Each structure stands twice: as structure tokens, then as C-alpha cells.
Image (cartoon, rainbow, N blue to C red; front, side, top):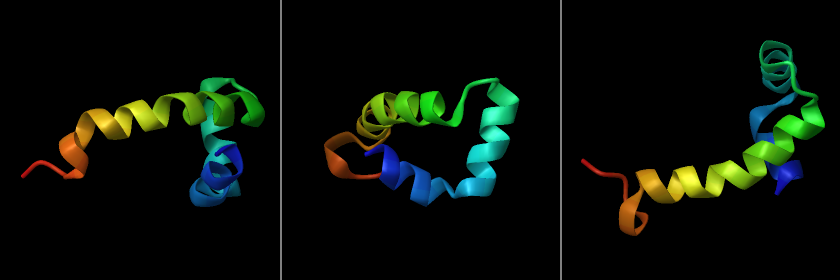
Length: 51
């Protein structure tokens, strides 16, 4: 999943996030890979965006 996140975010945004957080790009991608699925599930109950 990390390569997909990297492609989606793009190298420029990834570099900025890495700079702002102090995390390496690899660590940032690893954390996003773990956290994003849970965040998406939480904010799209039953697979739908709430109105």
C-alpha cells in the first residue's frame, strides 16, 4: 500500500510532510499505510460519505 500512497500524495507533498513532521519518507508512508484504512473506515460508515 505504501507505493500507492506515495504515488497518490506525490513526491513534492511527501517531501513537505516529511520536513514538517521530522519523519523520514519511509516512516511517514509506513504510518500512513497503517492509519489511513482506519481513518477512511471511520469517516465513511457503511462505505458512504455522510451527508
